[in-house]
Image (cartoon, rainbow, N blue to C red; front, side, top):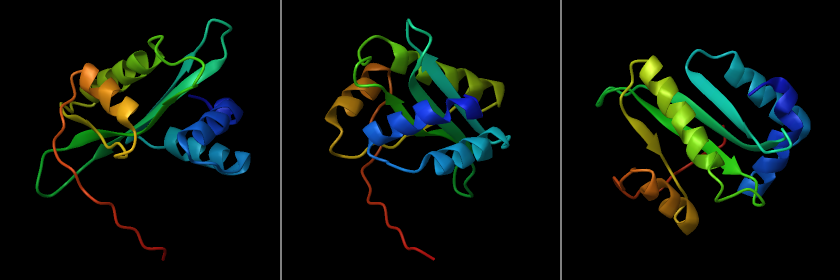
Length: 137
């Protein structure tokens, strides 16, 4: 992913349910690109246009070994089922190994049945269910 992909990433983020301004998307991308603990990749369609993106990040915990988590993955609704998502996950998987990390996790909203089938098809297994709590500060 490059900062120049911001418009396409922004459009795809809306499909994922996260609308934001183009300026915010550009800033978020740059923040990820500036980090040694993050990776981000795009998938291109046959016309060489961005049709998907993925973001992965290293996570460290006191109680467990380090792992990489997929922070976001989306493939354009017109391109799903053609292998772009699988390729994007493989890119993060390879990045994990380069970082010496051997655990890859992803969280998925309970309403995203298609995403659940996708991840199970890639060999992920369901580890647990949880609730996410948030507070604005």
